Length: 457
Ligand code: PMP
Image 1 (cartoon, rainbow, N blue to C red):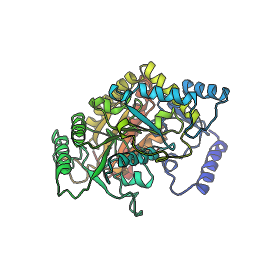
Image 2: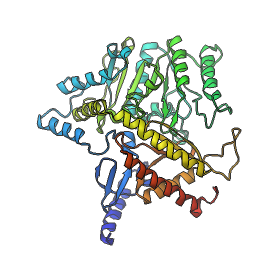
Image 3: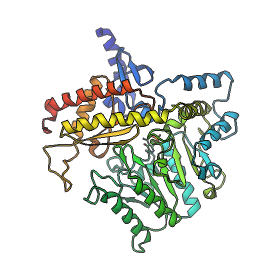
Image 4: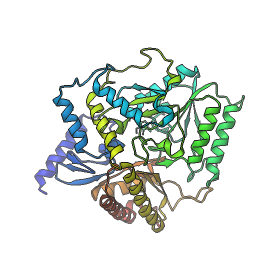
């Protein structure tokens, strides 16, 4: 590669840095300038190609520029559809809604409503909370340690991460946090099957305790697999217990499917693994086929809010509805969910073997193609369960090494110590092997490098 080409890329990066907010995030880890993208790969202006296991933070279910999504967009443009319609009707919108309803469990299919929101997941979270507040007249909201629901001030209030909140005052009040069944770092110091059991008992007791200090909750919001929290799957029996406990107390259960939804975990909606039906489902990311869209689906008895209770200019993104409709149909008709299950198993099998090899890999976990590898500091003190502390620097070094070797992976979780794989749902067997080859090499390189010498294996 010529120095001239490299200089062009550096020049773009310099110009970006000069103008873009200090709050920018991904460019800090991935200093590339993307010129084109296809499937699981992105190519930069230097002509280097990377495997993209970030996929727009899980947005690109079918990968970059899938022909099905592109064709739907082209055909919508040729028909001269209005690009933007607020919440007015269009044939495309009605078809899209009907496709979404057809994917729901029987109990919701004919007995639920949909609210289109401003196009981010956070706005749909805001809408969901307003909805249940209107319906129940409850004040407080119950959320979970380690959860993530977005970056607006209410969504942030519902999220666990303290770093981002510490300089903000007056976020959404009356949010109370419950223990998530994170078995590896059990909040009760127990682990094993006890984590989920104790969490369920704790929640049930709290809801019935007239001295709990928590007044009239309006709902519980939960991810079935905590994504940004470090790819932590909730125990399925725990999810069934949470459903039972909330249903018995008429407390709406809001499942945030922003990241887990639309096939990511191997089912169209992740709550299906537990065989439960929530009262409210929050969707975004993949549901727009790669274009911005978010929405809330909820049981019709909750539909007591008044016209205009939740509005937003960009609720009618027609191109997102076209791409989303085509994507949903493709997933339904092409065994994509089966691929997610098989590729998920392939990831877990090889990562499990890698964990045997390196003590610095503390935990490998996930559901479908939402996978996390928690790196630990083997020089640090063990916790009550015999686990080393999370090692964010090592995860960052592996992330850097992956990037140098042509693989883009995200980090998340406590102290950003969890390396996360969120590839397109259409990743092939061969691509999975290649991604894992690069990952293995990168782990070895990072562990051998001087800056993570504090983590000997
Ligand atoms: N909920 C979950 C579970 C998420 O993972 C995210 C984004 N990562 C959000 C909500 C917020 O979505 P957005 O960034 O589009 O606002």
